[in-house]
Image (cartoon, rainbow, N blue to C red; front, side, top):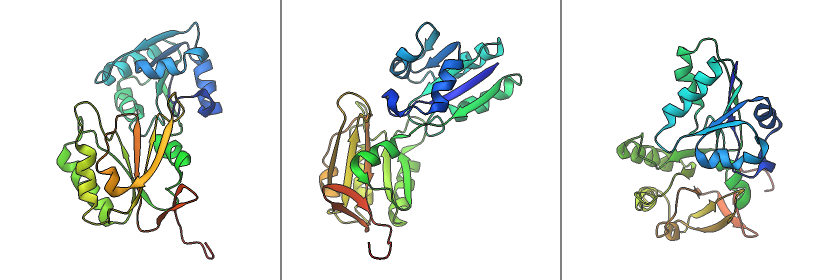
Length: 242
């Protein structure tokens, strides 16, 4: 009895690792957020599928663990990487109550990496990843993290930069970063990577502050070493002759 917590990457099956494909093939039951289950539907035809909406993550994990405890191999699918804002941590916490279940975390390509590749190479040096969602983390804590990353000179990658209920969080984050960086700072946005409507854009921090974005967008804010080179967002690492 095994529970795979599987990172399926940005969406298109071409981004699935061999380990992820093997985990899906080995599983009798597939669980996840509805969109993520749908993204792997063609690979799990005929298998039992279970999904729960946003804010029902605990119920999703408990279902997967209970099915595994019954003696079935289960794959709990997560967008991107299962351990980066995914279900791996929660499953590991809950698995203490299911000692007979073998839990295997299967890595995937997270949005920071797939979005960065689309834009160029903004993460060539040290960077910080911060989620702007305040469902589980107070906004006051998020503000401190943004400020710390800006002061530390990190390239900053922002997850969950906006939603119907959080229209002003990206602008608020930009204002914090503007205390340390100029409005001409190179930034980038990548949306729906590996899915229909994939797009990306390189722009300035001043322009980014005025943008409206959604949950399918990942935002990249450069530092003093980030430049636009042949239309791509590139953070120089400082190689001799570079």
